[in-house]
Image 1 (cartoon, rainbow, N blue to C red):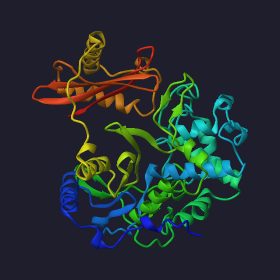
Image 2: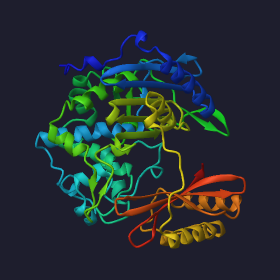
Image 3: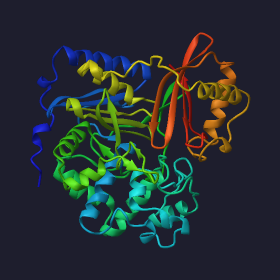
Image 4: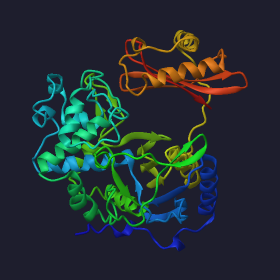
Length: 458
């Protein structure tokens, strides 16, 4: 039974008219060419009205099939919010609690897992090392295989003390739902989320089924477009983001989110509340949602990247504006499409331009300037960090060293942002290297060890 959410279903092409939408068409085409993206689907909803539901480019280059509003893209990690919904349905049914230790569902897990709760998995505060890039993507895994593999992963920090993005947690959440619901979590989504929300084509990925309007995924190899790499069928059914959705499906989902449908108000409150760390500080991530702001107004969003697809979904709550971007390129940056479109819909939503701010901690700036020179000479080690993130070591540390070594000595650091996220202070500087200017971001834990080290062109 549908929940009466048809008011936000895509309107006719006549709705997608006007000067702003023509500018958006031009912008999307230019951005696709710049990023070398084969195909994009864009959805825009404002104040409950579908402003745009449209495809650009090709869903399949070999057959020259154009993208439409019906084209199915892989969600990648955008699917985490659906997994969180499936978990909350189990909470509401009394089959589990957010405070349950996950050893309740994995009794043969390591003793250290006794401190990890379901909530920790949902909020990426479990400390579990991310399994992305560590599994054999050519191998099929059962739930038991995946659980046993996860048992071998070390904890990066004490559960609840920090935040670090980990697909491991959502893979485990899918297994938990499978066990407590007595059926595959994809069936839970099909029957209790997709159907009632009016997401008529959303589904778990299947390599063997005939799936109408399925897009092909692509990647760039030495600036040449190639097909996505193959992964085993079982690894395209895990709960960290293995779904197919169209932009029409996501527009229907947006209406469900706006109406706080499918779940109780209490469950939605849990989903959209920032995580609380053991120190008492909060981190801007709920259950499958980044809890952010833009221009002093709330912004809820999430992105995804997997197997030749990238996605981004943003809800600018203060403007009652939602933007959905689905691409079939592993190298695309859909956030740039979202930011550009948001600024066209309302110039106040434009990304702020970095500008110098008063530097009240010159000693920190001096330390971080010296750090740049140190990294230019030799790579960072886990000892420099508050915890050795699998996202940075060893590849990230090596890449940063090689980047700085090629750039040469840095010029003067100019502070453009200082903010507190969780327990960490994050400093962002503009720094010149010859004629080019870069943005240099560093996160410092309370003990002044590193949590973030990032350098990218301005």
